[in-house]
Length: 209
Image 1 (cartoon, helix red, strand yellow):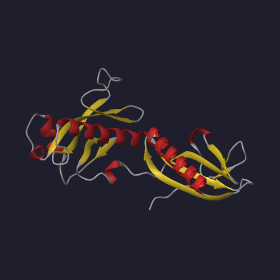
Image 2: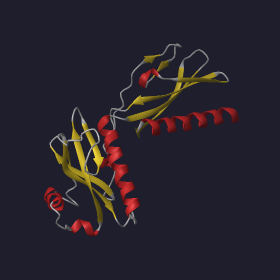
Image 3: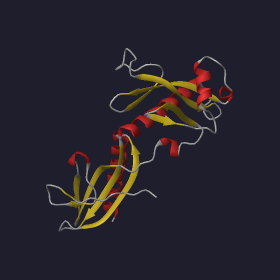
């Protein structure tokens, strides 16, 4: 079970929040005799994509600073053979894409061979691949889109771009009377979208009350 660390954060308007908002950004709206607060908090207890991704789309990588395996499907020797141009049995069921891993003040991933920010390739390693199920993704276009999506998820994970979506309810005296939080949203844009959904849902509930 994930552990969520609660903090006490008091904003400039005197509301005491259960979590610390990112960038001190809290939106307060008043509906009837209540105030509602909406904000994002940093998620420090998230799981990596390999914890819930399954075998339909996944990546493996064998750099000492970023080591991810899936021995049920493929091992390091298979990947080495594939890079050498040899056919491997996994190609019957999976479309395989090259994965680039840049290790420089953190770990960054890219689908394909190179990073634009590392034109000489000095810090980029090619010791990983992305596998996409041909059964679940029929065309090469859909396979590449799926591969890019899992690389993007891993990049967000490795950079800590993961958030909790929070809404809180206060009485007229600014006392907290309810709090709801949902965690594990990858990507700031995705988290903001869900926060807006929550805000619209609460506003409709208040209007219908």
